[in-house]
Amino acid sequence: MNYRLLSKLIGLQLWLLGLTQLVCLAFAWWDAKGHPASGAVDALSISVGIAAGIGTLLLILGRGSGAEILRKEAIAVVGLSWLICSAFGALPYLLCPPRLGPVEAWFESMSGFTTTGATAIADLNQWPRAILLWRALTQWLGGLGILVLFVALLSSLGVGSKALFQHESTARTGAGSVQERIQDLALRLWQIYFGLSIICILGLILLGMSPFESACHAMAAVSTGGFSPRNESIAAYHSLPIELWISLFMLLGGGSFLLYAWLIEGRWERWRMEEETKVYLAIVAIAAAVIAVDLWIVEGHHTVGSAAREAFFQVASILTTTGFTTADFDRWPTLSRLLLLLVMAVGGCAGSTAGGIKVSRLIFFFRTIGQEIVHAYRPNRVFVLRLNGQVVDEPVKLQTLLLVALAGLTVVLGTLCVALFEPELGMDSCLSATIASLFNVGPGLGAVGPTQNFGHLGAGTLAILSLLMLLGRLEFFAVLVLAAPALWRKY
Image 1 (cartoon, rainbow, N blue to C red):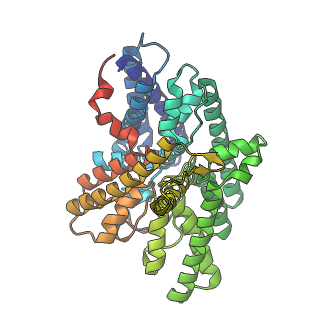
Image 2 (image 1 turned 90 degrees about the vertical axis):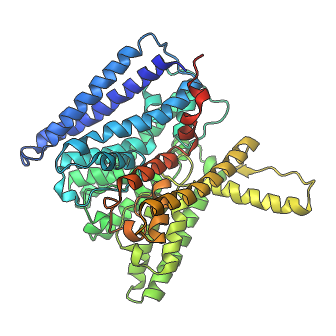
């Protein structure tokens, strides 16, 4: 392991983190005219100073490391950077009144960077707007990926740029991709991401939302993060146009940004071959229709229109793992609640900002099951697994099966751990807290439902849920590899 190079890369990321906190600091200076006692200026000033100071120290230690990053360092820096950025991102919550405890602050920061949207803050009205802006920025940075932005900005990463890109992002670039193409692709994806964010902000302003809240909600929608500056989330606005506009950008965030890049380039044949996005939209339509009928028939007090409105928004929010709410779905009928739990695990498309297992992997999974059933009575038949018109390699197939198995095992173990640390919680609360954290959804059911928060949970539980968020966001391997001793041996 080239520790000097690792130090240099982490130092550069801390400088990037400090620059984004500097944006919030500038807003805090401007906002302090109306809120002079908020404490945000001091908290962000100290945070920027610490990030820049330690980042500079790491850059000094990393001098003479060489410019090119190899695969080993690339894999290590993916896991380490998320842990370190989440730790430094917690500083504003620690330093600014009313202040969170160390574990709660780390949980809030990890929830933002992993775009989970679960919160340990009981009342957002007590916090300065500059801190809420930082909270929104963390999920926007984490949505497409801090390291994908890193790849787009730095031209000297060498062959490790592909490892950085693919271990942080669920986008797959193909075996023949070279470093220059990876950098161009990363830059194009961030351009699309930024463009969607700006369009969403402008639309929300036109629909009557304030510029500050428009920026926060747009960053949360496109990144599928779900942090809102309002305690009531989107329900605070009671506006159908706002709900539809935000639903559109949640669904776009849950779609494949690689597909958007291809369509912008005029490669419309990709849409004809596209299976994953069509299945993704079909899941939205079917789940929303079933829940709407369930609400209309079982609950009784819903009209057809109100049932359809609530069902569509919540399915779009939960499937894309955004976590915005317009209704207390914890009070919905059992069938509707179970369907929401299922779509939590599904998530969005590969190459999206959404969490979850991903629609493409579920297609692989069920097609593999179908093939194995046929193999039981036709053992000599040769199958070719395809998705979007392309052949899926055997290693990808095996990795998909392993990831689905790991996800299932982690849900079981995570639920048992939460139940051990929080014996007073019901089974639905323990299970949904685990699923909502692992698949980066945010709100769950019961004690962590849409009208609740995670602040009442103990420090041990919050630490476990924070680790689950990271495992889900980096899809296990980039985190688990940090525990492998062979990774850290010198060469």
